[in-house]
Length: 284
Image (tube, rainbow, N blue to C red; front, side):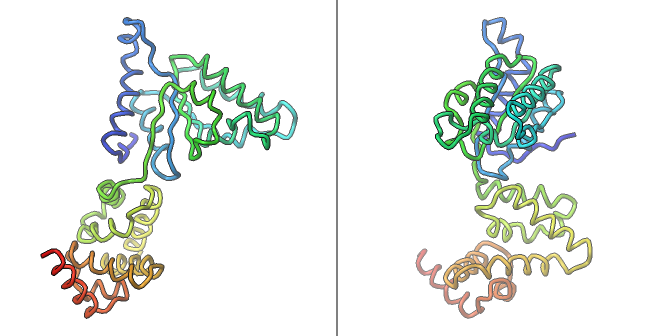
């Protein structure tokens, strides 16, 4: 069973619409419409593009094939194109979802003077394949660099789906999800961690949370000690002004004591009290 990914509501709606087109294809065809047979996912690394592709395939009850585009490249003239065609022919031979990550690595603008002829041939192959891709299968591509993708190829995709960096609410939701069975142990620190992880990708958050879970399992400390050590590591990279601001925010928005916050941020309790009082006066 593939786990439901953490998604913003607008993004979830886009993906559910894509799934609905596929699962209700006959209704569309009865009205002279065709379901999208391809889509391109756009967004920075670690925001859930691969996980979403896996989830879509599971929802559709189709196998997922993921093609490493660097594996098709060959130094032999024409061999890269042959490799690509072979992989694409295999994927469309049976109803399936094919996921091509980093599509820009083989689909760069053909007007790029720095590009080589072999890559231009790969773009041509992709153009042909997208035009002829069977409605029984779904081709999903992903890129971190949409500006590099050939415009003609871009227009061939049936849908464009944008993945953004997670909002604070989604960061909080993902922390709870990634903590899994250890959520009750770290419940008091979710708000603290959401502040630390703000601006980070889902994959970064998952990796860090797993590190903390391993530390707890191996007896490296209490949940509070593990979180304190993790937060201290992040705070050490901040300027003094940033650490003070972070400490005040923790004091105002979490249940941590000023002693705990001081230990985590290397900001004295007197400084925390002073700036918390200033912030309180400013609000009044």
